[in-house]
Image (tube, rainbow, N blue to C red; front, side, top):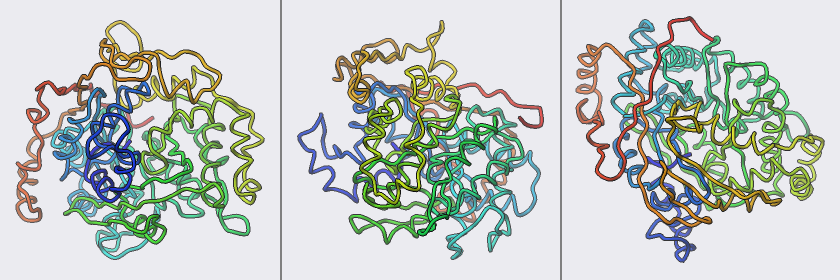
Length: 496
């Protein structure tokens, strides 16, 4: 969930009308918007729905300090972030020079220490960098014009590094060709690109499109779900779209450039970030009468309902890209209530209905499956060893709901929410403001890598290496949290 960092602030500034329209809602100041709320409002709204942790999935390492400072202003919930690699100049130079895996592992571990992150994210592997060299597309086995490396090489090197370092959360992958008709083929190949090392495929709905039919756009959900069911080393979150206004915020400058003409309202921001990464912010409105949007909605739900294991498929809207996180209760009702889902389906664009099998799927998620997918399984995936369960020694993060027939109402307003044993929400209203922790991992690495990195920063970056690194003292326990270091267990075996 995009809750901290440069992209979120740009989205907030780009849509002042979103904030001014809601000045009377909640306890808010300048940032009370629905699409990209302020740090204060974000913490309140998550807690009010019964969630006690959220993780920023795309921290540009050069911007890690600002990201953490912003998340430290987010009350109640725990937080953390995934550092973006795979298009940064230093890593691509290593890959092009065919540096050994040990050197790559040391660099990945150093980045985790320097950014105080809990995981590694790759966005359009190599593609953000390729865009800077005027490439406008990059498929899985296509060569970067400058470095002569492929996305497949990026994925294999990084997934192996994450696995061997023992980082609990697998490499978090935003694949190539997001939103492109026919990208289901790229996604299926991506699942095999790590050669058995674990991967987490994020917002997979946006990567599950065929190119069949008169409009050359169709659902690849059945093929994706079958592949997920048969690939125990792959996990995924869905990135469900829901109808209404939102704003898309992504490090994938290449795809956001392609989408800028579709902006609604018609404004956007695209930028490169040093030798590090990129950023694109494009407002967008999903419409149920639009063929493509309606089919996107159906594709996400098809993936949810056709995947067998709730421990490996997770509920997201890729906030705010598919919809704001406050839409979760509505999405849960769609998964738990077939009659409601069918009613919504019947209102869609008729051509989209004819291209979807959603109406024929009878499955309804159980309460236990929702609890696994949104709490227990998610905590296990991220590596929160003390969260997501009620065993002795666990943090007392507990949400209490009263069973209701209308699941949207039920999940929108819990009876009680406890954060680390303190009652913070009663009947959907915040009654106590506490400050959650920042979760990190700190795998071992060869400290001598800093000699080479110091020279690299002096030559190529606009900041020195010492200023790039975020110290633990900067996330100090000053009444607003502190750090919980989750354990890494290095993997000596080859792969899963």
